[in-house]
Length: 556
Image (cartoon, rainbow, N blue to C red; front, side, top):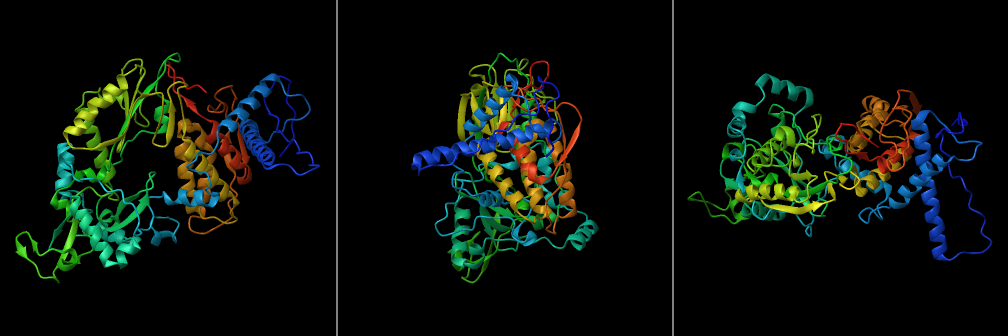
């Protein structure tokens, strides 16, 4: 790292580090004293990480030298110190090692399965004492009743309207091979446990039995929800391979939330609610269900003697088929989001064109409309600067959902601070930032990634996906990842030393209250991975983007 003095005494950069050396101990210290010294050292170390980060982001490898810190520098350092002191690890992450955080980050990859990449995807194995997140009664509403007519036709006639052309499908299988099929080991090997699981599906209206062999088979596995329960996922890759890709689904993002417009002197109020077990609350027609068959069982194993008026022998095979929209099916997100929007449109809470928060679309102006809304698959967020307006909109939507038998949970009304889609929204300071749990887990996972001597591009890609989503509240910060993606492309399957040069835009101002969330200038600087962690941690921990003012500006 080079050494440069400030150009003139009034310059803010480079900020000084706190390199105080702990004095030698003349006698043993008590446990509490040792804990306090250790805590102070940890805070000082994190402050220095952030100082190094912001100095390099400003323009090159700078180190404070010579002059006494100015008042502005002292205020900047104090702000960073206060922020580090307040940003303590949440209880949900305490005791979790960096390696465990890294494994958890890889475990959220939804596109790969264990056979594909040597086990980098961690699933939650089913155990006898596992707590599965079952819906009380699934299939509450017919999916075709919640969709536009054209899309409903796709659901009713999926094989004829959505199947890949024969030649295209053959070429795809030739190039990529037949899609795999994964089922939880306990369900695959223990027929008694599997039969009990299928009976539970039947009792909760998630499946039905038939004698005919279904058109396609799906697997079953589980992932852990934030509540600790197991979420049921169906491996529908073979079904997905035979269908044309679904249309892009336009969702909200942190960047879209950060672009909300409001006067600086006004506060924001939030109301939220979720559809419980959203996918499994939508029933699908029998024509589509035949694509989602499960491994068959005998009539004796299921305790069934009669099916559709026909007497059965104990050895007769019965095929369970899903009767609800499977989580894992490529069209599920698009259809659920579309159905959710159609239902909310019935609640008369404002036109979607000017009220819905969607990425890469002009943000709602809360000076012109009473309530803005965010619809993210099963999540609903209502935002207003008027007390009680957000809760009134939420209740109107709840009436529509209840009329269609869709259960809601995690309800909050007219709160100033709320967490949604992994971000914390503060209506008093009008800022958005990653939640403490996500910040700390990603911080620890990054620590572990950078400690490895060899990594694959697939591992780096997974982490980059999490970093990019977290930093979307300030889209300009994504420029630091260009070279890392080059590493991903070059070493996707083959492990190599991760030492990319990362290009970033420089000259970031530090302002009291909201440091380093806006970029100015176009002076590139390069640094390698050993210094990357400090910069990423700085952005994740301290960059929070203010909601734009009425003139459309973004302040930090």
